[in-house]
Amino acid sequence: MPAEQRTTSGWDSAGAGRDGSAPAAAPGGPAGPASASRVPASSTPASSTPASPTPAGLAPADLTPSSAGRAGAAPGRATADRARTIMAGARHALLSLPTGCRRPGSPGERGWVGLVDDGGEPVLLARADSAPDRATGRGSMPARADVPGPDGERLVLTGTLTKVPGSVETVLADIHSAHPSALAVVPDDDPTSLVALRLTVTDVRLGVLPAGSRRVGEWAAVQDAEPIGLDTYALAEPDLIAAYAPELVIHLNQAHGDLLRAVAINAAPGTLDVAGAYVSALDRTGLTLWRVVPSGAEPVRVPFSAPLAEPRRLGAELRRLLGQAPGNPR
Image 1 (cartoon, rainbow, N blue to C red):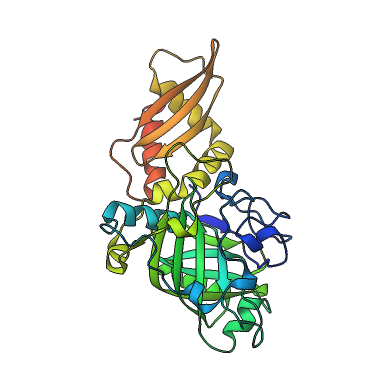
Image 2: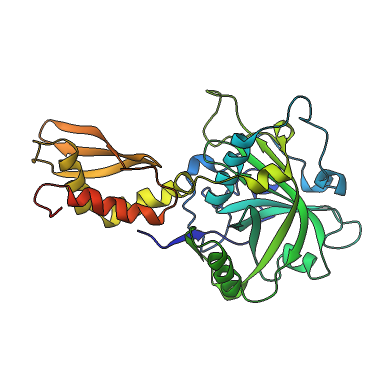
């Protein structure tokens, strides 16, 4: 199973991303020569996205939690779990800096940066000498990170941005050591060209699109994001299988075709003439495979022996399934 995940990094404030949409130069993630984000394209904001405040009008007030969405009961644990799952699976965020971050009286700045989850708080990867690097070189500052979810969600994290001392390699190694259940992170860019920035979160909000209303590339508007209590967010548990499913599915299909074919054969006893199989979906409870048989392609659901709590258990479960396949020792 893959022992790592890749994250995009950089900083783009000159392209189409100024209105909260994806930079035109890199529709799958932040602009930059080495971007190779595995975030599904459907989760990337596009020009149809409801616009956030533009950098020209971004003032400190835009980085302060508003009263929007406070009516009614606060979202519960399930919403917080969803927010943490989005955070765990995200590879980039739209970072907003306040007015005057470059020089007194200058407009605010906004751009895409790489993102690594550190127990619910984002560690952001930006290029050295970019606007975030220069701004935090003078000390901590208010900032906001908008994190896109796979189904058009918008996780809005507001807090204080500071530079993390040490090399990016050391910072990432420390995060992985603290959270061994998570996949290790490998930046797409040369780590020596990057700096790590920590956003100490003081406000959490999650916006979702109404069911059935989403257009391709759309994500929820900032003003529709509902607050989540910090304690509830801190105690929430991400679904790491759902968070890493896109990467795990890619890895299985690219590196374990023979294994999947054997599992697909075993999924329906009596059917040995299977030309191939690939994974179309993965969750805690099992795999959905498409297998190619003489009559065509057909879906097969392969349940796990028990729900998986973390990605490291996937390898053992697949070995168990492989052991049950015809011609394999049990």
